[in-house]
Image (cartoon, rainbow, N blue to C red; front, side):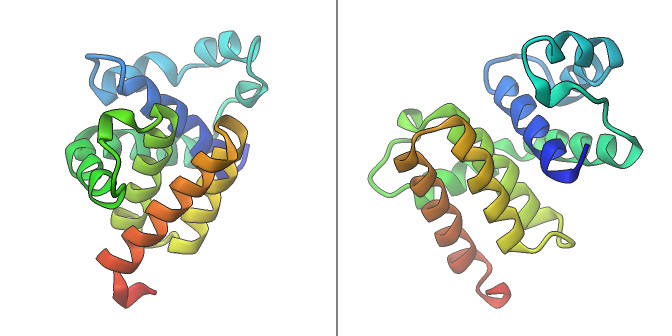
Length: 151
């Protein structure tokens, strides 16, 4: 497994958080197991190998971060999705943007351009091209406006 795969798994879990009353820790405790991965791997090759120590930490950090900063991240999405009501935004797109914004704001070791590029690559697997462009536009606007010193 690599960091891109770990990021995509974190996006899946962040997506699940949006439909659940579970806390991030509860979801992670249930899903970050060998058994859960084996069951998921039957339908989704992404789960064919269990994350190693560093990947587990990375997934956990992202999902817990999105869980604890969800309102803040959703506020940024709503702010930069000009002309769109948050409720109309594709939920997969929201999960991808939450993960990416969390990385940009709270994981300074990940360059912003890398985080955005990874978000776009993940989005290409799950949403239509116009939604991929939408995600890229929001994330680019977010970085330019909120973190101009990092541009």
